[in-house]
Image 1 (cartoon, helix red, strand yellow):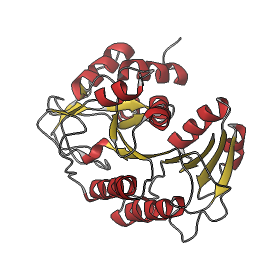
Image 2: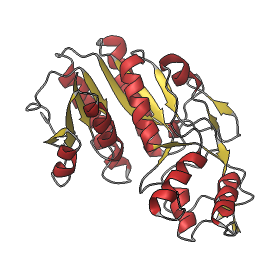
Image 3: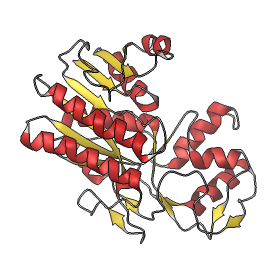
Image 4: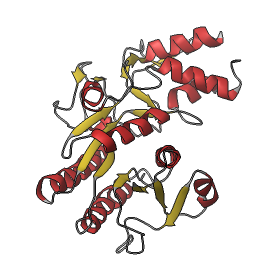
Length: 295
């Protein structure tokens, strides 16, 4: 397979690494050339273009069998999001219309679900983001889904939960820095997924996802914030963080939601199984990587 990864960053580089090890020919799009040596070492041939720019992919060595769109906005504003997710999606789908393609996967976010009542949500649940950036992500989904329905572009939408892994993870980093605070009694439900499991979900969707379908990529266990902090406190022998109001910490991009996101459809449709079924396995691996806990 010839594989193009648009947005070869934290998630995209891992996807590229895995599929390159499987023997596929992999190309990775990034705006900057700063990471080119690292990408090359993973078996990924860098392409340095701005996906939102006109004719950005004209010199890409297509055609490709698989395409992954997992680009990230360069900033937190709605304009930043619109430029990458909308302009980029439109340019990519237009460019791909004239090419044979086996599958395209767009990584969206479970942030498009705005439910705040603690209910379980699946792909049939209403998507009503509580933030302007979430609305952009939902609008981008429609670009790909419309292309699948009307232009025969085999696009799949993957709604990804909060990503953590090597060097990443809001709640773990806050706890280790001594800056974590329990929101009220910590009853809000968190939905997370390890970076390596996102990569696995993308590859599963490329292999077995049905064009025009939406799948949730999240681990097997939605958990309350209190559960996460209690586990960290017990594992590290530290006190549970002090409580504050239930407003989210400053600087968080996502809207305040409270829901249990189901991964059942992805598991049943593709056979995907997370390597890290819950945050416990994933956080433990990261704590051992950091040397906080011995193997």
